[in-house]
Each structure stands twice: as C-alpha cells, then as structure tokens.
Image (tube, rainbow, N blue to C red):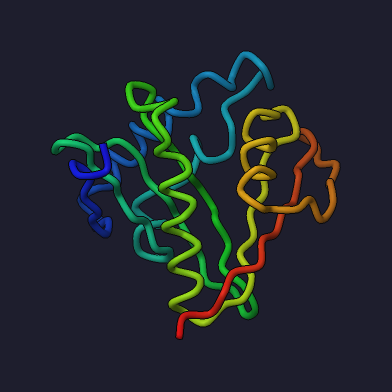
Length: 155
C-alpha cells in the first residue's frame, strides 16, 4: 500500500474534512468513555492556522492525519487519526513515523503525546513503537496517559 500513499500539508479549507475524519476515527471510543473524545470537539479551522496537520491520502482518498505542535523542548502529537475504512492496515504506524521524522528534522530529541487511559489499544501500540509512559494524570474527563519517545536529530 505504501506506493499509493501521498502526503499533503493541511490548509484552512481542509478543516471540515479534518473534522469529519477525526469524528469517524474516534467514534469507536464514544461508548467506551461515554462522551466524544477531545479531538472530536477541536476547532480545526484554528488548529490548521496554529499547528501542523499533515494529511495522508491513499489512492486519492483521505486516509489519515497527524497534528503536531512544536513546543520549546519537544514536538507534541496532538492528534493522530485513521479513517475507519483504512484502520488495521499499518497507517497509524506510518503517521507516527512521519511525526518522528518531523521532530527530527526540527532538531527535537523528544516527541510526546497523551492519550486516554481507556484507549488501551493505542497505549499498547505506542509502547510497541518505543514510547514510554511518563505519568498518568487524573482529569475530570478520565485518565490521561502521557508518553515520550526519544528521536534522533537529523544530520
């Protein structure tokens, strides 16, 4: 499938499509946590202006996205989403590797993310990808799992 994948940086006009993809990707978690996850309620018109959102297309169809935010000492993954029709095909790994390449190219040695503790499948994936759990934070809406991975700086 890799030969049919294309990347494009999101623009403001992409906000409705980003919102749609995110809502579809996160819909499976609503029953588990009893509410829409945070990424579903985000303002994507603003996010496209303030963050980097890279869109992954498979044969011309929006298949996934990764939203990153440069912080003073690391790159934060704010959102990673794969359309349901493309899940279980390894695109999550491709999106995560893309974010790590971005972090490296920007000179960061660390990439971070957080996820809901109830999304245990995601936590396990991130652990397999080399992330470590830094701490868990109890919030009114659930438990956030904060994770970090060291990345190599680009030469």
